[in-house]
Image 1 (cartoon, one colour):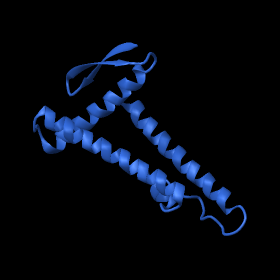
Image 2: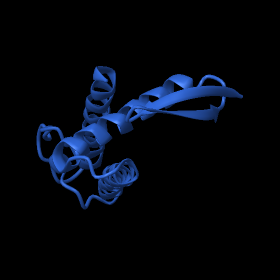
Image 3: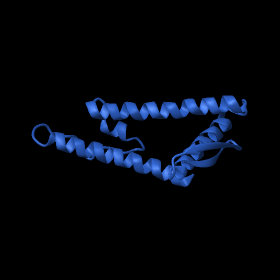
Image 4: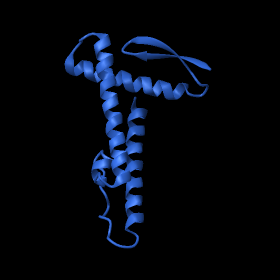
Length: 126
């Protein structure tokens, strides 16, 4: 087990994790720190505990939105362009008949890949 120090809102938090997970945890802490900073910029200093709690709510909201989009892709309830986010759109509407399922699956995977790449790019900027 490894121990790592994570900085969020200027405060250090000691966390134990599995060996090799340190880099991942650092990126997560940087993401949370960025959320806290953005929130503080919009609502002002309302106390660290409240800022952290509100940031957790924002991150949980993002997680629930992502899960809802994934579930929608699985069931076909979410339009591809809407699920892809970040301005991605489907290349063409799936045609009825043979091969439509394959085309739709390909488009869904492309949309997910674009979303993952966008998230990775945002994490790298941190």
